[in-house]
Image: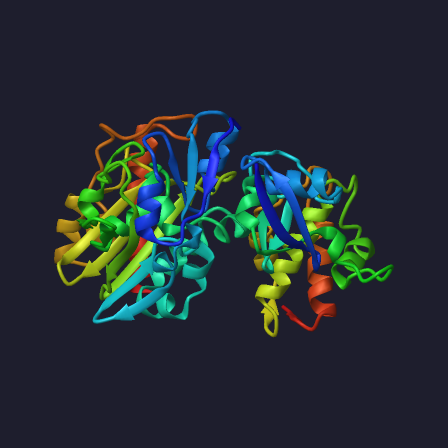
Length: 263
Length: 160
């Protein structure tokens, strides 16, 4: 790693102030620290968000589940509130990385990083979540803009993510056998605003599969999407899978997610 | 440089470190606690697993300064004097190691698994799933899985 300064502020306002043009926020560090170790980034300062009490905790109120940005995956996976309100979200969190990673990695870090293969983006899109930052609120669907690119402005901090509780939802991914990242992951949610299908791993960033949503709105069953093809155009090709294979996996994972939602 | 104070295996420890010093470097080079190993150095193999406030984490993917004021337990803090911890004893009993390089991390992860299921039941599938963060290149895992199940049983868990 190159040298850097380190600070751990105790309020969001101080954190925003502490950040300079070339510094980075540090959440759980599960992506940032490996990136620094490989010298793929050279921030002059890390602003550690772990001292911010406002970014912690899980609560349910008025049909909404709210998760603080610095809540680690293990806490989401094991939370009685999450298991009761949105069990699919607990399932999703329990499949990220491995136990050690789940004890450090955070929901805020995951979505701010916007890795195309991260799990949480599928839920943010499918559940129509709201991202609360220190400056504004962003609709989940508008949050992811491209490969490792979000609507966040430089210096903006994700404070919490709120998920409207759906009638039912399911998540299924085809994990990379080594890293457990989603080669493709699909969340299917039957929500107050209709059926929504969030796809991660397949494209540059999470997106909705609207043809599947239309079919599921009429008939919420795996059979309903049997003939709904996902076009391979624009999907990712890398050493793990071709765009065509990913397109195929979207259908397979969606069917399993529907089965889980109906389970 | 930054001053860092961490309680390691119950003992308060302080040192001046660079902010980029990893927790595992602090443990190995500042405290000479060389039981915590660096295998892959890319947060995959789990040989560097220690407990942070009782929970397994990979110390190669954490800065020492991030552990400021926290409690860290390493493999050196597991036994009581010459008395092996039941998890260590089970690894010996079940041949849960060959070269031994991954073993400190395996034991720390096994302790985490048993802690998470304390007072309940555990089966082989769960053990295998929860050992996903640790890689062994010798054993084929069978002895390790057997060791975790034996330790769980000896520590009062129901083994299905």
